[in-house]
Image (cartoon, rainbow, N blue to C red; front, side):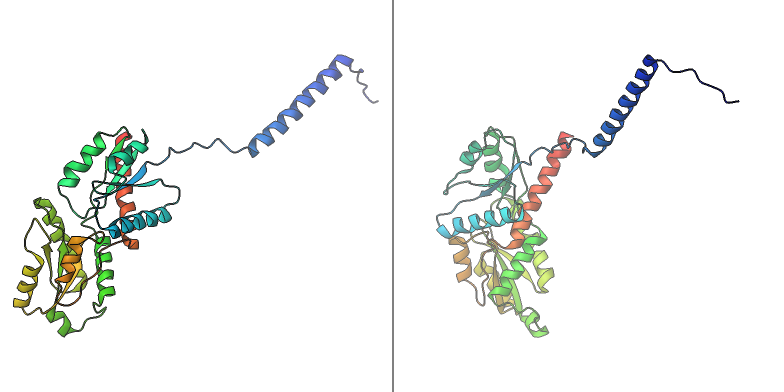
Length: 284
């Protein structure tokens, strides 16, 4: 005998239908929410990079610095890269910083060693600006500078694989601008040692002004040691009066200034990155 069930009332049927409908809607919403990506937290915009050139009356210097700026922009698309000068060329650094408003910026000096400009001029201009700024270390000493110096010497005629006789009779004078700051000379000597390790011959630092020895003195000292094939490695960021004078004193070959070499652009971005990382650490 089959058991019979009493018929269900309309309210019960209505409740069941409502529950089924709500369950269906909930299931659909859950499925759709799984397809929705979680909100993305936007990273704050990176600080602008401001290249700080010394400035020169030689128009080739400004052309070189601008070319270097453009190469940095090619390596880091989207990074704001600006240019400011300590003197002689526009825009001057205070004007470049004023144009940034209160946006953060990292200042990378296009200088090859420590000295008065790095210790005083650039920090003072940065402190007077409305923008939140940090000043990176100068470009030198660094292996990427040595890579650039080596390539410039090869371009000038330095043998890629010198034989033993050439090694015994050759040497390099690293011709720099010069400074009264003893730390500047220390930095230049470190670069000279790095270049000597790369070339396998003596490399003697010499200066166009404000420090000794001069380039002719260094050349004579090397000749007295039997090093008669002396090359001048131009340790200048861009062409100018000092670079030209040093090159004219070469008894053999003279390299071009560092210029817009790809390694220079990588070095600028390295200085920017390490200074930006310091900023981030301090903020944390």
